[in-house]
Structure formats: structure tokens, C-alpha cells
Image (cartoon, rainbow, N blue to C red):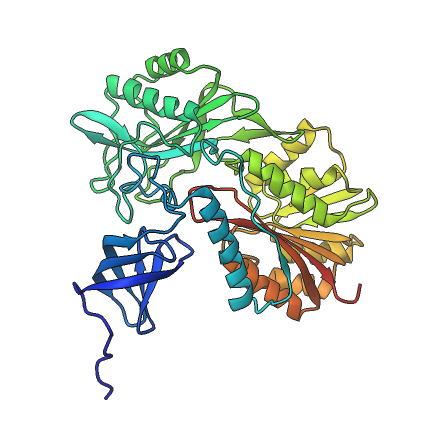
Length: 460
């Protein structure tokens, strides 16, 4: 029988460390005899005294007691509740430092996971002003001292940190949250309690069109009944400039999922509109729409550049969502075919194509790995194939389909560098060559980074 593994540190031990790296979720990494400790708020190069808080077989956690030597990239966070709130992770790192860390993250996973050594990885495309960029606010509602509170959860808990303003969200949505809390509180609306499964108001979502200036409020409730609905609606309309839509979504289940299946318009329109570049989008309560339109245009312009369209190409967009990338590509392509498994997203995509007068796009509901082979059988072949999958990356069945169908060019848009690197390895083994990767900072102050990769078939 094997003995207990002897670790180089013990719980509650206080030790001196030097931080070597950042994890993908923004924690500092220090090693003791090769054993990694993950420590919030540590930055590479810093020397600190830390207290070990938790140990696992292969790694542990600690907290900073004192920093002896600070990184030149360390800054004082602008947000007063940054250390309590779990909304963003990198405000203690200067923006220059954030962009360097994100580029390193992409380089590391390309080598470690993708085993891709010779690809051109460009510096991260950042924002001129990395604050106040998020056009959507989505917060849980609670109660304190008789009043409604709303904000992000404290890290790794369900304790709500009441938020007067969020520095990465547009100010208009701060105003919406303030008014909803005051007006709903005034009319006796009780917040949802997840332990007792009682109360009414679960979440508030605000959407703001940064170009159009239009605002939508979504009240997510436990029951369909909303006491004093007419008075609440009237006061919200009075209090919020350019409000175009108030929607109620009903979620009666015991769940952490925010939305339920029933959605109804309480006042105004079903959608608001906004623009990415010259393309207009209708955005409903449940639509997936990028939260940083300014950087989304940078991302999609890069995808369009990598696609190298001349106006003669057929393009397949394998995770088309509400048609955002498809419509961008349709500006330069002969024909774009989009496929998406969510029927409501395809409804939005068709509506957005009509809104922009684009008749060279065609959207289909279904699994890409089923639909695309059927298209090929019908004679629809892609000169360029574009994928923009969720964080888990492409389904293996879709990657197999791509390798079998062999489109000459591919553009891979990714919100997770690790799964991008994994999928690029599979595509490289299947006959493709990764030419370039361009990271784009869509979410300043957080640990996330998006990428666009350009691939071509090796025989081309």
C-alpha cells in the first residue's frame, strides 16, 4: 500500500514565494519545490509572504499576507468593491500588463496544448479606453435592511455585493439598475430567495444600444404575476431616457440558470436595435449579442480580412448564432450559409438579414456536423468555412466533417485559447496549416481573450 504523499508545504504554513505566472482565471502562480500554489492578486515577478489555505495532491491555494516586491505593472484598482466582487479579475494589473499577459496566455497554449511552434501570433488588439464597454448588465437581486440590492456575487459565493456602479459597464445600465431597485422596492416587490424558493424578482437585465442609444429592461421573476405591474412600468418609463422595451421573463424553477422559457413584453417593443459597423441588429431579451460592439467590429474585421473574399466565394458559418459574422461576411461573399442549433437564434438571424436587405445569406437550424454534409451532397461547397464555437470549442464530429470535406480556407473565431489550441492541433493533423493567430481583447479587466485564426489546406 502506498504511503501518504508528502507535500513540500503544509496548511496554514506561512512562506515566502516569487510569482512566476498568471493562470487563465487571473490568479498568481508560485511554486515550492515544483508544487504550484494558486494565489489571488499575485503578479508575475512579485515577491510575497503568503499563507497556505488549501492543499490538493497536485496543487494548492494560498493568500497574500504581504508583498515585498511589486511588479511594475501593478496598479491600484479603480473600483471600490473590486476585491469583494467577482465581476472582473485583473484591475490590479495595468492595461499594458493585461495585454502582455493575454498574449503570453495565447502563446503558451499554442505550444503546450496545440504543439504548434511556427505560427505567427500577433500582439493583442486592445482598446483605447478599456472602461465602460459592456452594453449588457445582468445581476441577481437580494434584500438588505428592507431595501432591494443588486450586483455581482462575491467570489465563489452567492452573497450579492450591492453595486452602485460597475466601471466596465455603460453608465446607462447603472442608472437602470438603480431605478429598478428603487421603483420595485417602493411597490413592495420581494427579491427571490434561492434557499426557500420564495419571493419574486430573481434577476434584472439591462441592454443598451451603444450606437442607437436604445434601452431594454428585462425583469426575471419566479411567477408570472407581477403586483403593481402598471405602476412599476409607468415609473420606469418616466425615469429612464430612451427606454424602448420592458420585458418580463418567468423562471419558476429551482435553478442557477437565469432565464425561464416564458417571455412577454410588458411595454414597448420586443426588440431594441444596435449596430456593429454598418450592420444593424434587432436584439431581443434572449438574443446572444456581443457585449462589446466596438471590439466585436475589430474581431469581425479581422475574420473578414483572413477570409480574403473577392465576391465570388461561397462561405459556411458553422456556429452562426444570430447571424453577426454571417452578415459581416455577406458584405464581401457571393453567398453565405449559416447553421445554428438554437431555433430562436436562427429566427433572429433571418430577421437581421431582412433588416439589412441582405438576400445572399441562408440560415438553417440544426447541428453543423449533420447539416454541412447534407449541403455538400446537394452540391453546396464552401470556399471558406468559418467557425465561432462556444467555450468548449468545436464538436469532434464537426472537426471530422471539416477534415473530410476539405474547404480550402478556414477562419476560426474563438473565445477560449485552450480549446482553440486543441482544435487547431486536430485540424493540423487533418491536413490544415495554421498561418496566423490574432488575439483581440474583448473583455478588458477580465481574464478572457478572444482570437481569430487563419488556416488553409496544406495542398493549396
